[in-house]
Length: 98
Figure 1 (cartoon, one colour):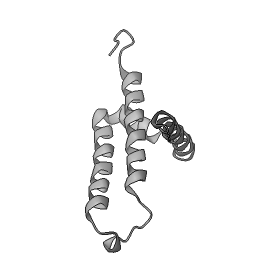
Figure 2 (cartoon, one colour):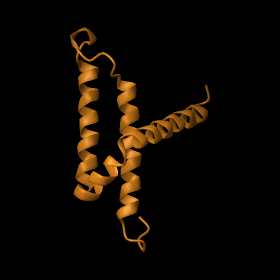
Figure 3 (tube, helix red, strand yellow):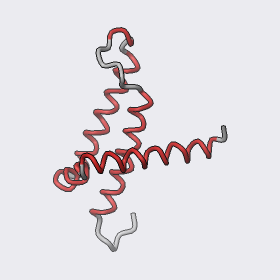
Figure 4 (tube, helix red, strand yellow):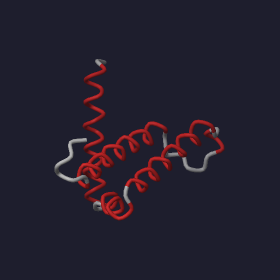
């Protein structure tokens, strides 16, 4: 499959997941970001990275949670990265362009 097309499909899936979770959970990420700033995003991304480390190093037969995958965790990280950019843009002064 063409990589550009696959990238687009993954981004569409990310958006679909984001929309569903925002519907169910509200804008909890945005609210905590506004309260605590970038450290809230760093914390969530670090949690996901730690999950990847466990999934990559702990044998599957030793894990009690069976429905988490590295792929799902990477998709979560991508969405958190995008949500962080949105919050950073929302909280910066209007006259700055970075």
